[in-house]
Length: 337
Image (cartoon, rainbow, N blue to C red; front, top):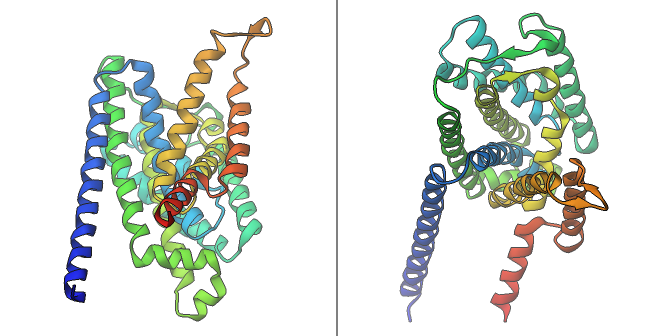
């Protein structure tokens, strides 16, 4: 068989593989869209949170997973987006739909002003600085009059019943999640993604070989910040009330990192796997906490954190590269058999 014919057969096989993957993804999205009208209100709310956290985790993964920069500042951009939407809508009467892209833009500008200088640092120093920036942003928002201070901002509610409201946000988060996952997929299979991985593996040699490391890291940071800002804006309208301590909670940044780590860093599938695993587990544990007796008393609400810790330990021991790393290892063994 000629090399040209072999190449044609391989190309056809690749196209069939992409077609099957695309059809599978479309079927999964269609199923999620159908679930929005079939499942109870509590699970609609839970899945909306899943979609939102997948957005955040995919945004974090661009810099944190592919480039290897541990960033605890996602909550900064998330909170800035939420408060941008809140201030514009309640004090300047900007239409809610217009505040969403504006929130993403403001979060991107904030990332440009405070995040890009932080990229001069590496490793634990970068992680600590992003953590400090998050705390400082929370303090600033708490003490500004325009943000309502510690009292927060009450957002305008949609004029629908509770279930219809939840469905609207469900489909909004679902649509944006699909776009974010698609963006992460394209990045992973583009030169941009390969260059970020080169930075993660060894930044200095990558720069010597011509990789524009500073510019690429800046792009990754700004993309993640924009995604977080948009998610924060929709979250503000979804919850109808935002205040500094909850909106800028460090738990958000930590959860995003843990979810990405469990699913698999530096893969577009990682957040898609890790977020549902963690959040659905948390929802089930919250239900059990009020129903199952444990040594004569109900399970404490913090029990889900204990389970998360156990899951993280198991992943660290059994799959250091996350669930996706385990899947790839199993696939590799099958191909060699």
